[in-house]
Image (cartoon, rainbow, N blue to C red; front, top):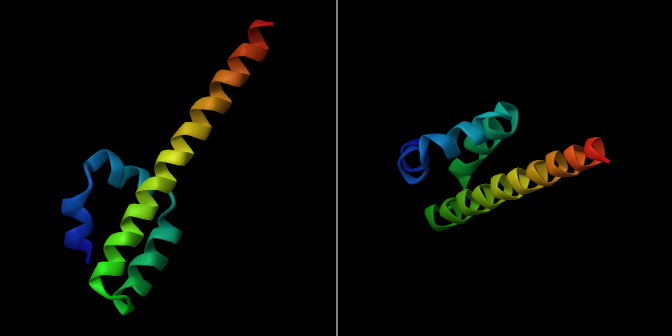
Length: 70
């Protein structure tokens, strides 16, 4: 599973996943019980979660900068 994870995502995306190692470790431990097709879907969901987090962080940063400028 780890090799699939390592090869499927860029280093930048893997670094994002590693920011919360506790969640990642729990997923890596429990994902072994899931069929391969489901593992791929789980990784896609995680990638979407990282994208959403980036968007929210960017929006929050922009909103804070706008508040400072007012």
